[in-house]
Length: 335
Ligand SMILES: NC(=O)c1ccc[n+]([C@@H]2O[C@H](COP(=O)([O-])OP(=O)(O)OC[C@H]3O[C@@H](n4cnc5c(N)ncnc54)[C@H](O)[C@@H]3O)[C@@H](O)[C@H]2O)c1
Image 1 (cartoon, rainbow, N blue to C red):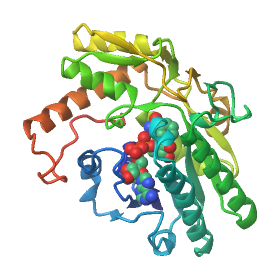
Image 2 (spheres, rainbow, N blue to C red; image 1 turned 120 degrees about the horizontal axis):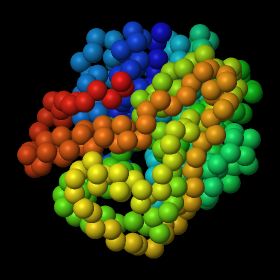
Image 3 (cartoon, rainbow, N blue to C red; image 1 turned 90 degrees about the vertical axis):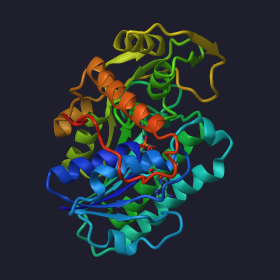
């Protein structure tokens, strides 16, 4: 199949491209390297697929570049691109609005103009649409508490409107806190590991008792690819592995690293969710997906990857000027 993956250089998008190629598909990756985090990391993410003969990269910005030719021959479009993260969405709403809503609308427009062989349009959404407590199943009332969550919910509604009006074969996936190798540098596990590697204190926002049901990236990718066979029009929670408080995660990282960590508490962040844990019965019964990776195993893989990456980047502290395509991927992430 010919698969279009938006957000191809990002954390989740790059794993998705890699696994689709491994399964024999042709992949058109789209990304404009938004400056939310270092383009050097995004280039590293993409390095593993860039030379693959069935991978074609388009450096298009979904907000402004022509998209018709990109989606014209697609069998599946995975719309993974977005501006993530809650905190910056309070101060840079324009970027969230344009990357998460306007970009989605432009992609949907291009898809509806395309020739019509599309089998699925898979939309990557988030547990953040639920709000403070992201518990329960997909019928829970969405009540986002951050501008990020609002824009992601708007994208869901927009896609549903296009699906209803033009028959776009939509499936929506609400990911719950994804972690593993290549995790975005602003995400909690990533910041904790970085602090430990550098011998710094770990800053925790709030009391550290926030509960997260985290999803290993390999499991997230399996669910995303399996959703090609999901009934059209459905929305699924993707998560439901193991949950742990933020403090418990830090204890696990202490064990992994063999180091003792100094924790400093800061005031809770605006829009931070108190508890997230996916009830994922629906996706399990519809397409047989369930998370397989235990938290300890997934954390160990992220630790191993990040330690190697940190060493590589600090070895070449001039990393911004080195070729961004020569990074290697030290661990297998989809086992
Ligand atoms: N990481 C998580 O835990 C998590 C949880 C829930 C939902 N999600 C969703 O999963 C998706 C991927 O998240 P991620 O963590 O991989 O983020 P990421 O920032 O690593 O990847 C997103 C990619 O999209 C690209 N992008 C953004 N706007 C674009 C535009 N206008 N044109 C072209 N490319 C653009 C960025 O450059 C980036 O490479 C997002 O839709 C996010 O909302 C992620």
